[in-house]
Image 1 (cartoon, rainbow, N blue to C red):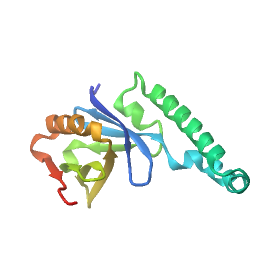
Image 2: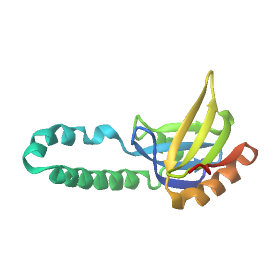
Image 3: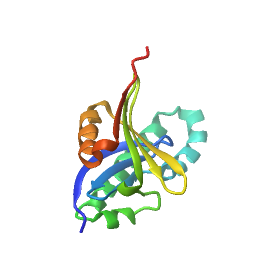
Image 4: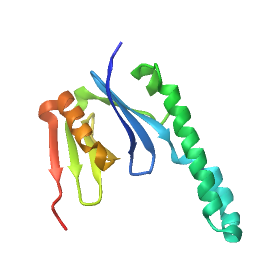
Length: 158
């Protein structure tokens, strides 16, 4: 059984989907904790209510459901293997370390990100936004797993 060696919680993809990244010894799994489709019914109903009451009731409902779903999904991850976690949601993604060409930890002026360049038949980039307080943890974690494949980029532009 593959051991989980680290977790980055609450990383976001460009589509506003939120993942927990589970790092194993040979692969990582991006496990969805909040998918944009989890909230579409609230957004759909919110349009008529928003006209009458403003957006605060809808935002509150979105926030409550988001918190509940994240907690439920994280509870489901407990005591699971990477293979089990991968199968819990169809939006979960596997990152095979053998196919990773490079890992880029970027620190920009307004955001920080973690990017995996993966080579299958085509080369593609899998990018996650991370919080500022996750930079050191992300750098240390991917540095220990990928060593020579890790690149740091710091944007100095104003």
